[in-house]
Image 1: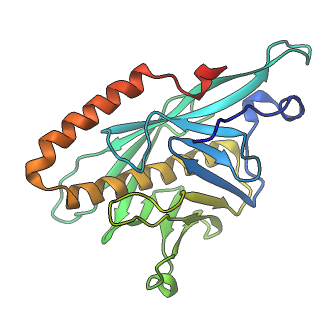
Image 2 (image 1 turned 120 degrees about the vertical axis):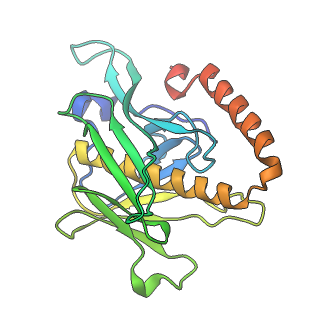
Length: 246
């Protein structure tokens, strides 16, 4: 992954640190490994995860928002950043003969003014190409696009407005991705709702990738895979994130 840089002095001084990123519509977010950047400002890291959701090697994922601010309150000084842990998500075990869908629990890690305390993301009946975050967003591939190899997932708000369009990268025969996952934000969103949308997007990708691994991994290799995943998790804990570079 290319070296990322913080935003410019002008970008930081032009917006309050507490609400720096609220979508005004027509912005594309790009997942590059475990960082999320803006396609319009590729050196501006917006979010960072503790692990790549497309690898699905962990039982849970943490989503951090990168916050930038000046080192001095008088509008002068150096641009500094910190990671703000806003959401965690993990699989939620439920059993019901009436509902065989899968669930992911998304937990807010800050005040309820900034994040939603708990959001349950539920898969569609045929898998994770469709899902619902009750009261917030629904995601699905339109019926007219389901036979297309490059179909997009449409994320909608409760009122039916298209909030975002998700471009899903294809996978090669060896499981590697042919491109980067992208989310094109189409409607104006408050920072709190944008953060939740990003968390839902990451949770959907993570759970879809996990389902693919569960289906394809031979049972006799499962123990070796778990050892590898555990080792990579330990390395992720020891390694510094984007914020550690500044």
